[in-house]
Structures are given as structure tokens and as C-alpha cells.
Image (cartoon, rainbow, N blue to C red; front, side, top):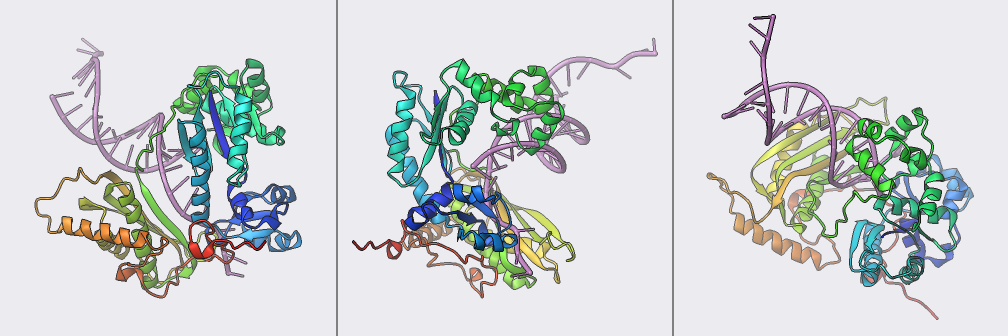
Length: 420
DNA sequence: TCTGGGGTCCTAGGACCC
DNA sequence: TCTGGGGTCCTAGGACCC
């Protein structure tokens, strides 16, 4: 059996944990730039606040219901996620951390446990971190996902649901809508509804060849998973990323090339740090630049460009040179730009780099420099104490984060003081 | 009139996930 | 005035190889 542990309203729960007076209040967390709603407490969902809704269209509503609003604080959420995942690892040795707020637990080597009791205990153990979770247990990942949804929807008090018999599986399949299935998104929902499918049970009854033809091999795997035949492997070792993207909308529209170049330099530095963290080098970089396409009255512009690097690298200095060159090639004056991004592609392990015959770069020296830079910056609360000149300037690009909470768990001066 | 049988690599586009 | 930021996988078609 496989368990799926999913944190309830994760970002909202993280924020609320350190402000207990918000315990039964509506809480929302906004995306970067305080743009859209990306997490909601149950109370916020009950008022009718939709996922992804733009905050600026709901100001009156948020005020009238006294909704607590937070900017995203990924440092806090990452740290809370670590605590949750470590707790799970203490109760199961095969854990796949699937996302910041979800994990699959492999229970095959504990066949004699009582699954529901186990889940209830596990849930209580995680609650000690302050984060509430729901748990679904089933023979496949896709069914565990459905069981988890079911627990959230119909068994809120216990927060746990186990699919250990055909009858229980059928019950969940019958009361799950087609788009509740893991792997069925908006397009497949539309297609399946047009063919008369309503519930997960309807899909299970469909002929395999039909599913294969209309939903590719991915759909075929999904179908088998719903029938209790595992087709999606556990992935317990973290594979290195194949691409690394850093892209942000600016806090305000920018036209000036100097401002945009400064933003790009900072995003490049972040991407390069991520690259080194997973011990990879990039062979190709892509830089893209775009205007705000919600402002249809403004002239629109989008361009992206790929640059091949002569020798794969993870050096911020070198990547900055190519990123700057890329911007020179795609930048056009007089547009109101909203967003720029860099994608590092064709990543390879940094100990398997083929050097170039005419390479002029002193790579060992660059590597020592980057190692020293990372070490210094790591030891200062993650603040970038040492950086490249191109990264500095007037920071016109920086994000709006008007409701940012403290880093309660990662920055010493932000730790709460409690008066008794 | 009749024209083989295997393969790989690359790219764009489409689908999905959190 | 204000609308997020990351990822993965699959397929079809074209170009090429022997």
C-alpha cells in the first residue's frame, strides 16, 4: 500500500501557525508581487475566494470579511516543509517528497500494520509541527490521491481514508468527478465530458484502446492505476533537474535597459546558485523578455533566444556574460516590459565537462571563486552579502511584497518572543 | 506494373503537475 | 495601478543514417 500525505492549505497553515489569533479566521496567501491568491484557509474558501483570483479585484471583499492577507514567504514554507518531511521520515523509511506540501510513503514493508490506526498516529505526529495534514492510503499512487481527496472532503474529523477493499475503491471512484483524477486537467476534462464521462468510475469502465487512442500512454497508465495496478514508480532518490528557470514579473513596468539588465543579472545569479547546488553545468541558456499582455492597449512584445555556451559552465560570472549578450539581442526600446527570465538547459554533471580546445577561461580559478562566494552567502541568513557589480543598482525591478511575514524559523532576529 | 526495412535525433506543440 | 513561478513527459513529423 501507498500513503499520500498532503498538508492542508499549506501556505495558509504556515502563516497561521505563528499568529494563533488567526486560527478560525479567513487567511489567504498571495503569489509573487502580491498578484493572485495561491492559498486559502477553509474559512477563506467558504467565503467564495477562488484559487488564482487577482487580489486587486477583490479588495473590497477581502476588507469586508476581515481576511488576513500575506505575501508569499517561501523561506518560511520551505523550512516548515522540512519539518513535516523529517517527521514523516521518522515513521517510514521509504518516503518520496513529491512537492513542498506532499509526500508518498511506501508501506510495502509493513504489511501487518493496521493502516487506519497508522495514518491516525502519523497525522497526530505531524500535527506536532503545527501543520495539519490529510492522508489517503491505497494500492496505487493515483488511488491514494483520490483517497486523500475523499478524506479531505468527507472525513474531515479524522482526516484519513484507506482503500483496502474493492468496495471502498468503488465507492471513492463513484463519488469522484472526472477532473478529481490525478492526471486529468482542463483539456482532458472537456474531452471526456463531451464523450459523456462524469465520474472516475465511468473512466474505469472505458475500453483501454479508446483511452490509449485519446489520452496516449499516459492515460493508459492512469486507467491501470485506477484499477489498482501500479504503473507509476516510487522515486525516492531526488533526480537532478533537467532545466532551471528563474523568471519574475517586475514590481512595476520597466522600459529602461539598465533596469532590466539589473533584474536579469539577479535572476541569473539565483539560477547559477541553484545549478551549483545540484552539481550541474549548463550547455545552453535561454533568455526571454515580455510585456504585460493583460494590458492589451499597450504595444505587445515577446522574444526569447537560445545561446549555446562554448563549454558548459556553472560560473555566475560566465553566465552573466552570456545573459547580457542575450539581452542585447532581444531588447527593444520604448516597450513597457513586465517580465524577464532565464532558463538554463542541457544540464550535465559538473564533473563530466568536456573542455574546449581554444578555451581561454581559467575554470579551476572560477570554480574556487564560486565555492567561496556560495560559502560566504550561505553563512549570512541566505542574504547575498557578496555579489556581482551587475546585480546592483536602483532595484526598480524588485517585487511588491507588502504583507511579508517574518522568517520565524530561519532568521534569529525573527524568532518569536513569548511572554508568560 | 513494379520501388525495403530498419533505426536515431531534433523540434514544436500539447498535455499535465505543484 | 494592480493578473505567479516553477517543473515533467509524450507525440508527430521531418531529416537523416545504413
